[in-house]
Structure formats: C-alpha cells, structure tokens
Image (cartoon, rainbow, N blue to C red; front, side):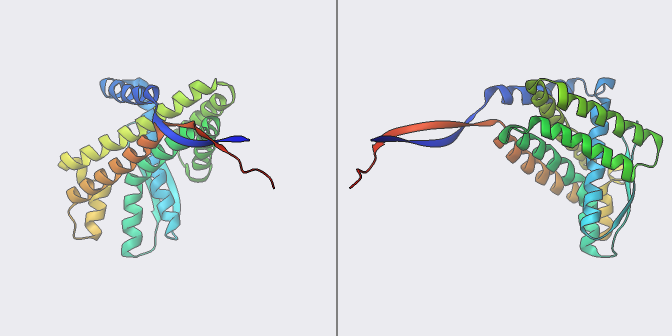
Length: 246
C-alpha cells in the first residue's frame, strides 16, 4: 500500500498584496475627502479603545470614551497612581490601533473568519456606545456603524466582507501611522499628545516616545501584514510504502 505525505506551506497572495498597496495609495490620495471620515473616526475609536483596555488591565476604571467629527477623541479614566500603570495606559492608544488592525487582518485571512470579524466589530462598537458613550455624536456614530457592520456580516458576499475587512484594517494602520507622524514632526500637536503625557511621567522626551511607538507599531503591522498576505497551500510529497502487516 502507498500513502502520501501532505505538507502545508504558505505562498504570497499577490491579489491581497496588490489590494493592500492599492488601499494605501488611494487613501493617501483621497486623505482629505469626506468619504474617508467614517473610517478615520473608526480609527480614533480604536485608539481610544486601546486606552480603555489598558486602563482596565491596570485595575483602573473607564468613565467615558468620546469621538468627535473633527477626528479628536478622548478616554476619561481613573487609573492607579503608579509609574507603570500610567505608562501602559498612555501607550495603549498608540499600540491599540496597530493590534486591532493586525488582528483583523490575521483572523480574516489566516483563519478565514471574515463574517465573524465584521460581526465582532459591530459588537465592539455597541459595547463602547452603551458602556462608555456619553454624548449623542459618539452614541450615534458607534450604533450607526455597528448596524452597517452587522448587516454586512450577514448579507454581503464573503469576498466583499473580506475586502471590507482588509480596507478597515489597512486604513486603521495607515491612520495610526499618520497620527504618529504628526506627533514626531509637529511640535504643536506633540505638546498635546499621548507622547507628551508619557514624557510628563518619565525623563524621556515626547519625540523619543513618538519615535519608539512608531517603530513598535510599524513592526507589529509589518509582521501581521506578512502573514495576512500569505496563503496556506497543501503540498503532496512523494508516496511512501506502508509497512506490511505481519
């Protein structure tokens, strides 16, 4: 009797890579277009969610999360009076956006959870609205986007769901990179940023914190993007003879 060994290997998925590059190029070209505003606000909510999760992890309490039409946001929380707690919470926004983008990419493509991930995004927005939304705009934005995501997860063709997930993840990563760029090169913005809050509790200048989190975020995104644009392939190796029964 003969049997075959089946091995799994990954190959570059050129379609996904082209789509990812195309999303970045088009987004940069249309950066100031109002069409992208909902996705910018979504990225802001991801940033503030990172702060909220970090606050909960250090034993703090989140009082309110706000997003505004001008793309500003804030997470009002009470956190323990400790050095590491403050550093973790102030850093949570920077790294939170990158992690959200990577998880969306990996779970969508490496684990084929397209509809589940879009549905999970809808649940996330509802939770943030009901537990931490205190103003009408934040409530309306979160609930409105949640309804659209839930409808898309249920009724859109699976290929379109995957494409939408790819766009959201890529744009969120791009928005985080642009946000960090402003923290690095615009001293007026940097003086009011999370990097400045980190500088206030450490001896490290704000521009160094912004550079550090830029490098960390890029590394996280590069790793996630690498795995997301590769596709598992089953490879059948040469046959082997099964041992004969006695």
